[in-house]
Length: 287
Image (cartoon, helix red, strand yellow):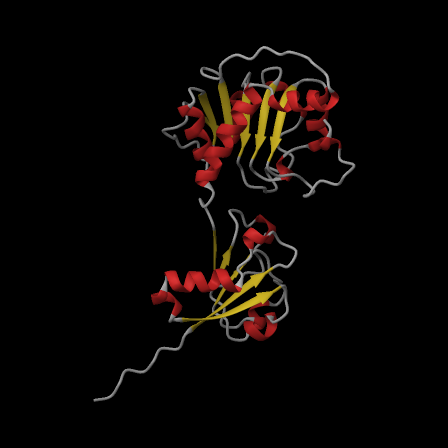
């Protein structure tokens, strides 16, 4: 009786960035714990745990799978002749576009939907902060300036969610649960059970009309770059609040500073900025 040949292990390259945040790094300890949780997978993979490009070219000679945030794309097919799958550790992949470097037959995946629970919590927090003028009060506190402001309950107000993908739908879900009337902007116009009225990008101005809040969740593309600016801010209810969970580039930051300074917007909560991190002299630090 002959034994079955042992299948060659799948070569996996994990590229960490030394300059990246710790939460996004796959350390040796984290990898070991993951192997313990998934022994059936661990026995079938051979992992190169790398930092920046220290061992990139050597590892790419045999790697079939890569997990990374970014990578050198020039001549990838020649540098990585066996590579079949690139997994990007982020919800978006626009930083790798355009994808003319991608060889035929290679698959790119991403962490779509991984932040949904956090998104719901963040949006709920952000809407309440904006509704009750918390950004203004913290600024007043630093200046020791007492200026009372009356706030009304959030229930019954209107929020527009621009970009109703997975994160956008999570945003709409929590907003609806808080009693807000939810408008959505989705490229296809396909309805969502969490959105009372859905619009297409061509009707963006109508979707923003007199809204109390706007939440941005769309990807950064040539079509969405600087999409939200002076005209869109003016369409909102005076003193409206903005939450940006998308990318910094979807906002006209000059127009944003102006709208905040003039009271057209009552407050903004920015999860992302351009550039990121903001330089110390950015007006957004003290607007």
